[in-house]
Structure formats: C-alpha cells, structure tokens
Image (cartoon, rainbow, N blue to C red; front, side, top):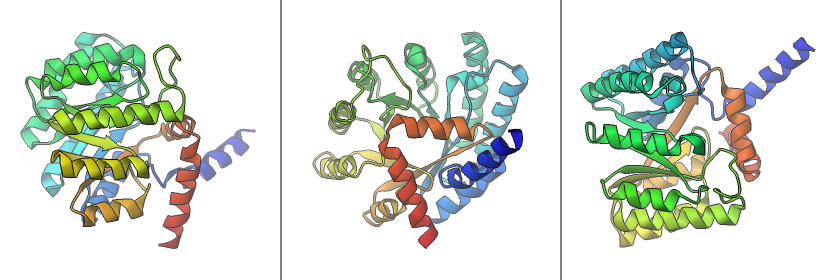
Length: 290
C-alpha cells in the first residue's frame, strides 16, 4: 500500500511540476531565472501554512531571506509572497510581528516587494490589521484580497483609503455560504466589480487570474483608466496569453510555488474551481508541444 501511494505521488508530481517549481528553494530560484529571461517578473511562495514549530518557522524565514538576496544579486524584478501563519501567527501575534519585521527589513535593504497572502476567512481581519501596521513602514508591501468573500468590497474600500497595494484573487479556500459566493458567476461578478474599483481608484495593483474574459475586460479598462498594474499567472499556466500580454507591453508576473507541501496545494487549486482541471490539463498538453 505504501509503495502504491509513493508511486502515485511520484506520478502526480510529474504533472504538478507544470505549476510547482519543485521541493527546494533552489528549484524555485531556477524557475525564477527562466521566467525573468522570458521578460516576466516573478513571485516566489513557499508552500505550507499554520507553522507552530520554531524550527519550521526559522527554516521558512531563512529561505525567504535567501530568495530576497538572490533577487538582489541577480537583479531580478522579483517579489515574495508570505502567508502570516508561516511566520508564527498560529502561535501568537507577537511571534509573527517579530519574524515579519525581520523579513521586511531584509526586503527593504534589497528593495524587494513583499506580498502578504490571504488565508482562510478566520484570518482576514488579522491579516488586514497586519498590513496596515507594516505598510506605514514599508511601501513595497501588498496584500491579497479574495473575490469569493462577500466582505471584499468593504475591505477594498477601506484599504484604498490608505493607498494600499492590492493583489486581487478569486480565492482558494472553502468558505461558508453566509460569507462567500459559491457559484462561479457570483465570484466572477464580484471579481469584475472589485477590478473596476481598482482601475478607478487603485494605487498599484495586481490581477491574479487565468480567466480570458476578465483579462480582456482589464485590458479595456486600462485604456480608460491608465494605472500601474500587472497580471499575475501561476507558473506554467496560460503561457500563450502571457507572451501576448508582454508583446502588448503589459507587466506579467509568474507566481512560483515550491516546497514539499505541493500535493495539498495542488488539490486545493483544483477544488477551488472545477474548471482548473481543464485549464491545468490544457497547459500541460501545450507545454509538451513546445
């Protein structure tokens, strides 16, 4: 049974390699170099969350610091994306603030952008509070908002008052129907509403989506409301669209996850939207033709 499970994981990893850099930070940095050579910016995220072990937290911090240092040496336009529970929020706020302060200081010295990732809704208020605390100290800091949450419009209005830098996502966590849109149409409609708000009143923002209709709408809005923004795609997904956007002078970033927690991450991405199965499959087939 164990042998069968190991075989299945190896098989699945060959597929997941399409959008996962690998198990190690060096794998992620190799992917980052390749993406940058293709005229893309990069965002690296170490997989995993809810760390309660000091050793695990310290390892995560060292890896993010290595990424930041590598960006600086190689002169790569890169960013890191951090989940608060990776740096001790699951222990207490004091532990997180101490660790995140160190990361911010390292990023400041290297002029590297930091994205504060959004986790499940139980952490939304806390994450926004963290963002407000650190954005006043470091302006190269952004925060993710999830369009599947009904509260996102209120949160965006609140964050825009401070000039916050927003990464708009659809959301990858299963949430209660009382607080979240469950249908694809509901999420898409809210994403479009929030995106329009960003174009009308945004400071600097990112659109994390593989949806062609939304991308087309964003391109149209950008003509009416010239803003500093970028499109963000998962590594290995929609390569043809990325190339076309770059030709059209849009900024494109590859979101590059890495780490041993790739299986749980991949399953969540697929569960997030059933359509992702087809999207990942078509991207895999396309890559085999290159």
